[in-house]
Length: 314
Image 1 (tube, rainbow, N blue to C red):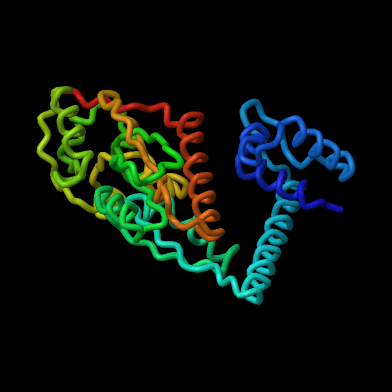
Image 2: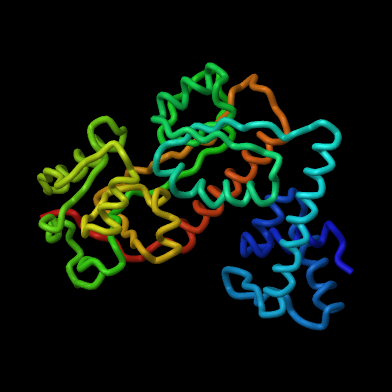
């Protein structure tokens, strides 16, 4: 019979693909997790994970087991939510302010998961610039902010920071994906699209492109990351954006990403809350889920990032 502790261990190892990363998340020793998994595999009579050089991958037996575990965890969470409602604790509303690319990308599966596992939590998501997100945190109108280039302020507590690289984003069937040229300059006629002058990324990108010898007048610019992604996804454009803005498309293989060799600009993503804001379980749950998802993306980018790079010079 599976014990609750082992259930959490197996779920986290499956999510992270690593006993070490699971141990960091659960604040327990990696040897303890490994020992319990090995003991259960022996009891089960079959391996749960295939141990590869850099990761752990579920076996067929493991896939069946994890599916059961996650259904069990969801039902358990729903039961606890019902109990909390009977006790008069209704979860409450969590107000999140996030920048466009994050709100319409990486946050979507997180919010869907929260809806399934914690139905008593209501989420109010507002798309905002980093400056507006900061103002809402300081005023107390936001419980959590997730933003690129979030300004510093003594009244807010940045609980986690993550880094993402800037690169060329294009459709998986775009000519740049199949031609041998490695120069962005060769694809200017296809249409380069950039964040507009109101966005903090605009000036660093255009300055770095200019220093690389590409005097670029973008075919299209916008203050909406979603608009730029749509131009790349369906209209043949090449967007210059941080990888984190398109991570869900990369999973679905509708878009591809290649770092630009002349651009070493790191984009910092901040997860923050008001320094003295009200803390409740709903806010804590959402903050943990967002932090874990962003950490997974950052780790994946470091360990399994694209090997192809595109030069921007002439």
